[in-house]
Length: 195
Image (tube, rainbow, N blue to C red; front, side):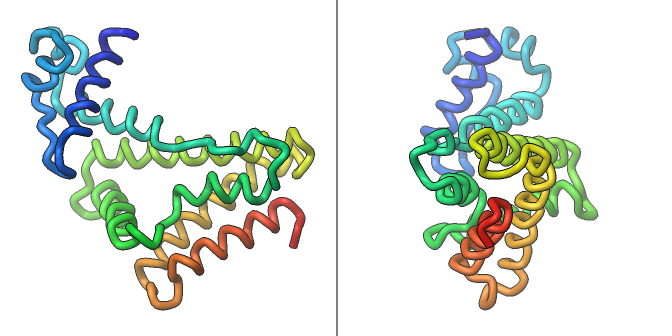
């Protein structure tokens, strides 16, 4: 593991041991956790914002799971839904998930937009699209959809996930958690030629 990666892992350990929203990712705390001096940390991350960005990106990279997408013995629609469901609100955390989604977009794109938040939002969007593209590519290799349909289907799924999140915030009584998940299942059936 590179020194840079070791620093990121140390910061992630600190964040995991902290209560939500109270992680102490100061240069001194992270350097101590990584077993290095603050000046060494600054060599790899000149600003605290650089460190925070690297930690968030790394967290996103490990947060998205492929689940059973590569298991051809299982139903392809169920495998794709299982992967897509991680981007959707859940019954247990609906309000927090949607609030986080909205605040990220507002901070990245709103009147008081922040460059770091915009970069992280863009990274999250790219990562989500890449995952959808990869999962659909697996299903295309198995013959469940045409390879030519992978890119447009990835865009359609991603657009639907984002649109459903916004719709769930604006009209929660109509776009419930069950309705959101039902719409994604419907779209997956269309993509796989089942409906």
